[in-house]
Amino acid sequence: GGSSAFFDSLRATIEERLHLVPPYRRKLVEVPLGLDRPYWIEDSDFDLDFHLRHIAVPPPGDRQQQSALVARMHAIPLDRAHPLWEIYVIDGLEGGRIGLYSKVHHATIDGVSGSQMMEKLLDKRNHLMTERIDKMLKANPEKSYFFAIGAAHYPGEVGLVKLLEDEGWEIERITNPE
Image 1 (cartoon, rainbow, N blue to C red):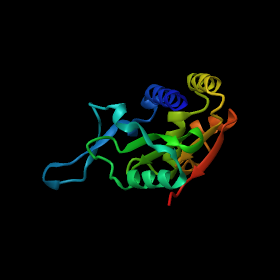
Image 2: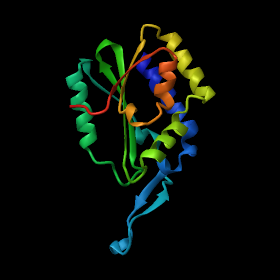
Image 3: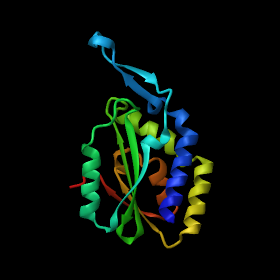
Image 4: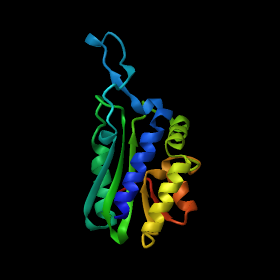
């Protein structure tokens, strides 16, 4: 379906571009006996599938179900044994919508560098990503509505959200689920 195609496209794009965002491959390592602050190191066991997840609410997921799911995901601390970020693609939303929720620890980014990192990761000028999204849109013409959660946190409307808007998808932003 449309959400599987979207997830596959997003995964391929992140996999191709992850080298452009080094902090997304770094994890914290504690210093023995707490003699110093933790250090950032390259995660030699990095696994993209740990960070990019495909989940669902029972269909047809309404705004309350989606908000409850996002609140639960947001309340779970990021695992410090891995790089401190996660992206969720959410299925089961009413009207065939697809949700996108991203979570990045503030220690990994700040407001400016965070938007720059997301732009590098999901830049609309990436030709391969544009081709994938175009194929997905043509394969699923009835899916003209994309539901984005958390995407408005990135100034300048960069990356995937901008690409989908330019391709004619309607974007609904929810920045503070209740």
